[in-house]
Amino acid sequence: MPINNYKGFKRMATFCKTKVPSEIIAALEPIKDDDKAVAAYGIHLGTEMCKHILSHGIKSLHLYSLNLEKSVIGILQNVGLIDITQIKRPLPWRPSVNIRRIKENVRPIFWANRPRSYISRTTSWEEYPHGRWGDSCSPGYGTLNDYQFLRRRSRNKKIQDEWVVPLSSVEDVQELFSLYCAGKLKSNPWSELEGLQPETFKINDKLVHVNSKGFFTINSQPAVNGEKSDSPSVGWGGLGGYVYQKAYVEFFCSPEKLKSLIEKAKDAPSLTYMAVNCKGETFSNIGPNDVNAVTWGVFPAKEVVQPTVVDPVSFMVWKDEAFQAWEDEWASLYPDGDPSRKILLEIKYSYFLVSLVDNCYIEGDIFSIFEDL
Image 1 (tube, rainbow, N blue to C red):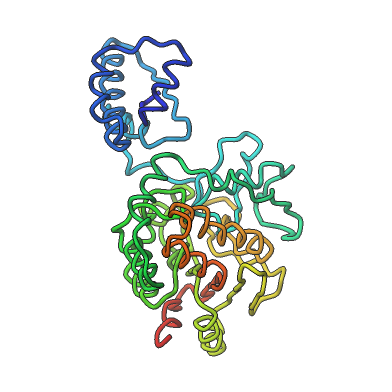
Image 2: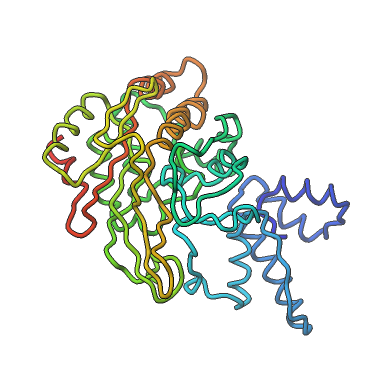
């Protein structure tokens, strides 16, 4: 089991009554408050241990990841057992290891950056979507509770370091979102993942531009028209297939900006949108049960696989979590009465959350609607 952070290591060693060699304690002590350095040391130590084991003729290794697979992958790379460039995603999102969800292959796009939250809110389902999303009215999501906003210590520190800065205006908020989309910040209050995903680099310049106009993006994907399924950035599903995506952007914006965007969307028939504020006021140009497949793939000897959808019913569930993140993931890190906290809460209670899809994945340009807004 690789060492990922100092407190977790000490807790596990105490629980297991493990005698830790003095040289390991000596190596960890100077870096115990630096989670990144501790994880790097854990990979180094694990690598040396595995090399020693393999050099004595042992042909098998058993590593525990505890859902922190980066360290395990790093160790296996270092000992030459895997080539990271050859690891292919079975789906656009990481499947759960829970045996009850083994057939699950369809999810709403909204939780793409918060997979643990999605799993926790759907853990009571008797069946998980397989092949198609099905009746959008049937899922019963678990209630929103503190679990969805529990932060790992390392992530909490990153958000504290990168996002908890003095804010004097909405423009300061705008700047932080732009920095994140430019890859200059590694954490995000709306994401459990670290940094931008590989496919985002195809559109990050456009995302920076959109954020600079006051549209605060929290989820997106580029249009893809028949790229090979082994593409390093957008590939999934194994070899020999082709994958497709409709361009998608999800963002917060002011009522005034939303009004202008809706007006422009009237002249863009390929665009579909949903918008809602924290009070539940909605605007949309689709029906309440119109499920839209936004990612799909075709593979040899298989039916078309459509693992990601935009579902209006799920969007109305997701919006509570998205709005609450303004407070629980960000504003709460400021002291009571801090002007920065006030700005964030004003955004939470006045802005709209918008889901925007460009259904023309061949020649569409989802970002053109933001020009002149």
